[in-house]
View 1 (tube, one colour):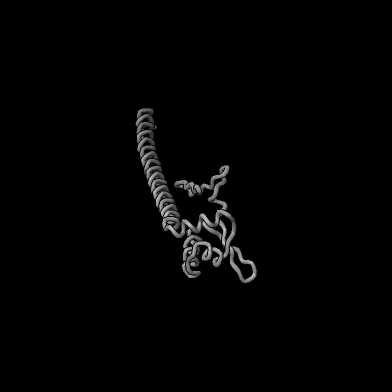
View 2 (view 1 turned 90 degrees about the vertical axis):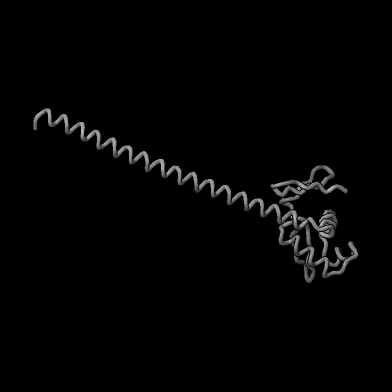
Length: 145
């Protein structure tokens, strides 16, 4: 092969390798764009999940009776009948409000024989000196007397 042809071949090889390099860079860019899009979608899903969780907490404590139940449970675990008597409401009404708080993970239940006792969820409850503060992650609720 003549030196001239070898030189042209080298130029062609470089041109093809530059084109293939360009294609690889474009493919890499496309991969980055798809990863960025997936991360953005993931963040949006997390934000909507966090917003839904926060809304559930706020809905659960948004009722005046449920707020009274939470305040009653600040003193310690109570049964449904204890709460009904304390708040002067029907047992079925107290049970309904405790169920809503339970499904929102604000209260936990504990069986003791035939009775079920409810207590505040310590994972979202913070003791700060004499105050009780609920930390829902999205907001904090200070339950002052």
